[in-house]
Amino acid sequence: MKPLSIRSLAIILAWLFICSASTSGSSAAPANRQVHYYFFAYPQDTFTEYNTVAGEISDLESALGVNVDTSPGGGTLVARGYINSHYPHNVLPSSLLYAHF
Image (cartoon, rainbow, N blue to C red; front, side):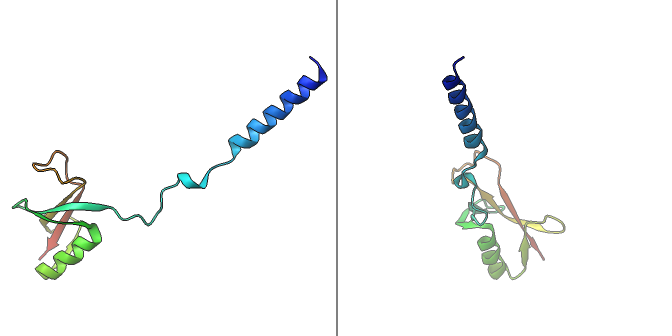
């Protein structure tokens, strides 16, 4: 091999190594992204609203006057949140909200 081709090969390998080690900052998802769900009242299965989990908990607590959260322990299921608005539902609920009387 000629010395020029050896230098070119070394420069190309160094460039590939440097470029492969760098990361782009735009690939990460934002941590504060709010996910919205289509909430349906249970057991009637009627649509209530398109909201975040925290927003729906706040609305249900003010409407029912009891503590509402996502923990099933000792609670009664009052709402189910779906990722789409299809009816009849073609996916399982993504969020379940329970009222603790």
